[in-house]
Amino acid sequence: MKNPFENLDKVLEHSARLQIMSVLMANDSFDFNALKELMGITDGNLATHMKALEREKYISVIKSFKDRKPNTTYKATDRGRQVFKKHLEGLEQLIKQQKK
Amino acid sequence: MKELQDYEKDLISIRAIMERSVKFLSLSGLSGVLSGVYALIGSAIVYSILYYPYFPIDFHFHYADERTVVDQLLIVAASVLILSLSTGYFLSMRKAKKLNTTIWNTASKQLFIDLMIPLASGGLLIVILLVQGYYGIVAPASLVFYGLALQQGSRSTYTEVKYLGLTEIALGLTCAALPGYGLIFWAIGFGVMHIVYGSVMYFRHER
Image (cartoon, rainbow over all chains, first blue to last red; front, side):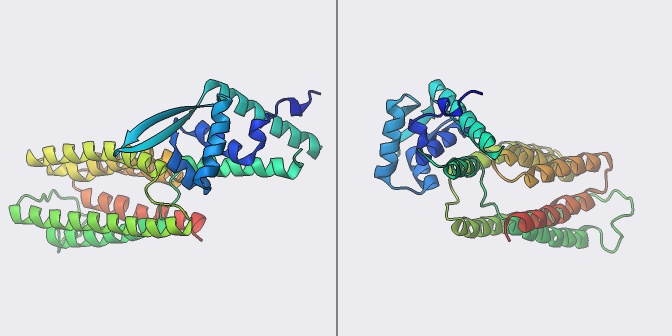
């Protein structure tokens, strides 16, 4: 049997990052403030997670202006989507194995 | 290394957050029930203006054609619409507060767009045909377009809305095939069905 841990991704081990990725999987794009409200975490906290995901190229960032205020929108990249799917598969396998 | 329970918690939490990010869950079922009640009261008033003392089931073409009557009907329809929308807004706002979220978010914006395209096209079509004197179009067209709007919008909210939409479309088409019974179908579609599906939503998601 394949080792399910191989599928797990180090960056997505963090629950908040996994949640952010899941929102970007379910939506074409999502902006910073909406994400902050949905997750119920602080600006700084969210920004750190977004930086980490951006560094891994799991997400792409689009900066623009909305009503003259800076507005940051995020999208999941193809790479991000693949890693997320693999990570989920890994989680499922892991839980299935343990339940046997 | 994380514990197994943590992984399970992760899976549960992402399911919940995915759903909350795409679905507008503050939509109040109770407001659906109240809209249904307003629509039934409105239908009763229209009945008293148009048909009384005839029994509404009796088949007869009794069209609203006098100017004053049409004005009265429009006032009733507008009141039902405004009352329903404001109740929906107020109760959804209350539910959003309870769910610790806001009423205007990504999901509700999507829902609004999905609803407005069929509603605005249907509304304009009805107005255009009304001006040309096709009074019979109002009940079936409003039911069909409202149903299409709900069906389209349901992807951003509870699934009950989808079935309400499909029911409204079926009622609208049946209504179109049976001219003269518009008011009855309208009362069933906007009154009874709102009460039925609104209660289902209320008991499933709000208690």
